[in-house]
Length: 401
Image 1 (cartoon, rainbow, N blue to C red):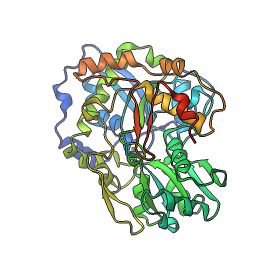
Image 2: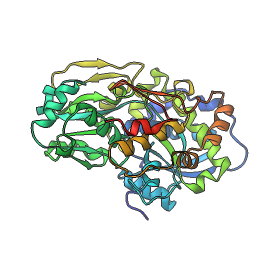
Image 3: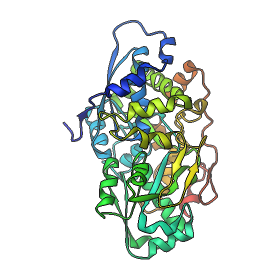
Image 4: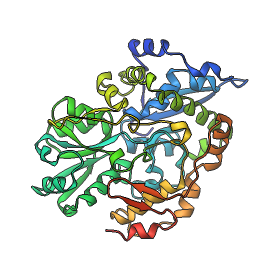
C-alpha cells in the first residue's frame, strides 16, 4: 500500500450536530434502485476538500446510491501514488496534478489520472513571514525588494501543481531574480510548522493554513490567489482510469459532488461547513480559522488590516460555472510549465487535454443536474499582470517574459 493512506475518523460530535441541524437537499433526490456502489475517495486537510466531506456528511453521496469512504492523505505525492495504485478510486486533487504526472514534471508520465469536474475557484494565498511585512498586500514592487533583500526559500505543495504555478507566476511578475529563490515542496498541513522554525520565508497553499499563520502571528497574507486570477481553477475531482471507465459510478459521483458544491455556495451554510470540516478526522483546525476566509472575511495579519472578498472568496458552484472541467485550464497550466522552466519541450496540448478531461461524462451529469456546461477554449483574463491568455495560441504565452 502506498504511503499516506490514513482513514479519516469522521467528524466530531460537534460537527455531527452542525450537520444534523441543517436541512440536506439530498432528501429531494431519488435514490437509485439496488445496492449502493462503493467508492473510496482521498482528500488532503484543506478547506477546499469541503465538497467531498459535505457530500459524505450531509448524505448527498448516499442519496445518489453511493457508499463512500473518505481517506485522509498525508501529501499530494501520496494522493498521486494511491490513485495510480488503485488504493483510492478518486480524490480531491490539485487540478494540474494529472498534467504534472503526464508530463513527468511531478510523476512518471502516466495519463491514468482523469479530471471529472472542478471542485472550487479561488481561496488560496501566498503567505510571507512577518519580517517581510514591508511587502504589504499585493504590491509587486515592494515584494521584489523584500525578496531580493537576501536569498529566500519559498514553499509550494507539489511540482507543477496549482500552488507551484501561483507561486512561480507571482515571482515572475515581481521581477525579482528567480535564481536567488529556492522553491521546495512541503505538504499543506506542515506549512505553518515549517515557517515557525524558519525553514522557509514564504509559501503558497490553500486555506486554512494561510489563516492559521496569521492567527499564530508568524506570517501575513501577501496576496490571495483570486487577486492573481479571479475565479481561477483550483481543486478538481480526479479519478483513476478504472473509475473513469465505470460510467454509472462516475455519473453518481459527479452528481453527489455537485449537490455538495451547490449546498456550499449558499453562504448561510458556510458556518456549519466550517464546524464539519474542522473536525480532527478532516482538516483538524479550529473552525474559527476556517470560517472567516470561507465567508470571505480576511484578516491579513502583520498590521495590514482586513480585506473583504465576499463573492470572490472560495466558491464551489456559481450556478455550475465553477464545476465545468475546461481543457483551456489544462492548456494554460501546460503553457506555464514551459514559460516558467518546468518543462523543456512543447507538450501535445490537444492530446493531453483530450486524454485527461472527462468532458462527456461531466456534460451528461450536468444535463441531469440541470446546469449548463461552460463554453471551452475561451480567452482567459489574468488579474495580476493584466494578461489575456488565448488557449488556441499557447505559444504566445510561452514566449512571454
